[in-house]
Image 1 (cartoon, rainbow, N blue to C red):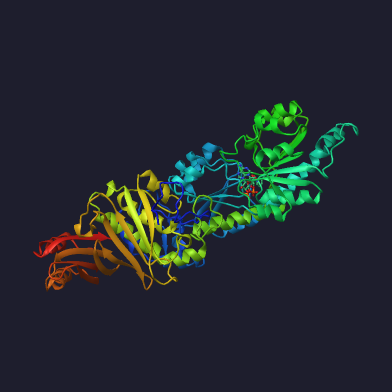
Image 2: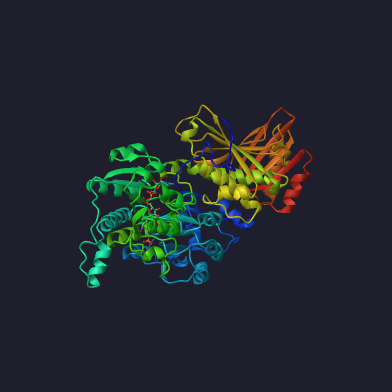
Length: 630
Ligand SMILES: NC(=O)C1=CN([C@@H]2O[C@H](COP(=O)(O)OP(=O)(O)OC[C@H]3O[C@@H](n4cnc5c(N)ncnc54)[C@H](O)[C@@H]3O)[C@@H](O)[C@H]2O)C=CC1
Ligand SMILES: O=C(O)C(=O)COP(=O)(O)O
């Protein structure tokens, strides 16, 4: 199987479409790393919660992978001793959110609702909060993430569109972004239908005219919907619901969506067509695609020119998908007979906006999601997602992290620990740690590549390699980004082995190329540092160093010694450690040729002092040794 690289856009082994919020902060000092290494990791709680309960600035000693004990404590009532000691997570809600959602948030953290913050005020306050909840009115820019100084762990978008959140910046800062993608679908679809029908029958204009004392029955003759062709642009959740309702109104519905499955469209009696076919045959065009760099101003002079003269346009998606000046021109020229708009490039639009003031345009102030039902639903949906993320649970709605389904997650749990420890060991074996550019990970597995999801494992190897040599904070959100930023190329390879299909992975081998090693016995013939590990009885074990088989549980710290293979070596080293009160937890000896050279891997509970290390180094038969901090 070909090696794949995280520097490239796709990864054969690990390309999955949904996100998971493994969210951790880093240990910035060796002391912290030590305690981090000693903690046992609860996979269900791979988490931002430890960090959010004990917030600390970047570079400080915080391990955010929750221990099983911390997880237990988190679920205890708030008046328990442990909970009293930990500050509650802080949540800033910057736009109106339904009460049920606020209640849920308050049951978990300290919630502050500040609805009218200017961008400057948001930046000034954001450093106080672990989570930020927004709707479409708050721009969560790079400046916001910078101002948060690493404190902000999660941004919750109480709705669907995340075009107001700088996802790239969020990812770079290791901040998880979650949204509430389902609770306002029907509200948005109903608003689309309301605009469609209202526009066709001039409801808003006629209403305004009557209120101005007029009775203009001839002026407001409308057009019928039945039998007309409606083009749905973006056949996702809202688009499909609009289609379903429009079919009920007797319309002929077509749709354009490059990513929508044809069978979903067929099931609704909707034909999927090309962009040009959709816009050139439709009497009504309803927009339901997200605002992205691709869809930005996708409706412009050129596209309006291709439309049927007298077309009517509905937009409950995002204002930015339309070039608004071009729409005004198309309206003036009669290409577009009418438009009904809920969303605008700039919200609110300027009071003298030609588009808003146009007599053939009906407008609403971004009300698509604004029903009581949808707002309560969205509030609960986002509150659950944010609380879950702060607790370190899986989030099905993470937008900037790969989603690993819970069953995969629990299966990979022991390998997560192993992967990080292998990364930490490998980097400590490198002669020049910061010069590492190329890492190869070889997974021994009986599974085929498609059923082996390695993103989590890869992220942990990156964490293990990078954190000991930098002040970066690695989590699943930013692992690939930071690796790329640091010029670290990770290639992955799967080797088929004949092991139990019940275990996703038999072994993980981490190889580092072209750096030389502090412990030459860890080098393979090709000059790569190589270590391999396996999970045994749920515990991570180091099973190979270079060409030598070893078997040592990866707990505490580790000595690797290379010595002449002769009697008495175990006793000699064991005695030196014993004299210094260093407890040996594990020992394994391996050799390639009898009486020539052997490798001793010794697990120790305590870190030996310099004097002890010196004594070991002075044993004549010891050719080289290295002490590794797990
Ligand atoms: N006015 C309002 O209050 C509301 C507005 N919205 C907007 O509606 C949009 C759609 O919402 P959902 O249906 O829930 O999202 P969704 O993700 O279920 O659907 C979006 C669809 O657009 C498609 N798409 C992406 N690029 C496209 C392109 N270039 N051409 C055609 N289709 C493309 C996607 O494949 C997807 O099927 C959101 O992104 C949001 O901006 C959503 C809810 C309320
Ligand atoms: O969910 C969406 O994408 C919306 O546009 C709804 O926006 P809002 O939360 O009402 O500001």
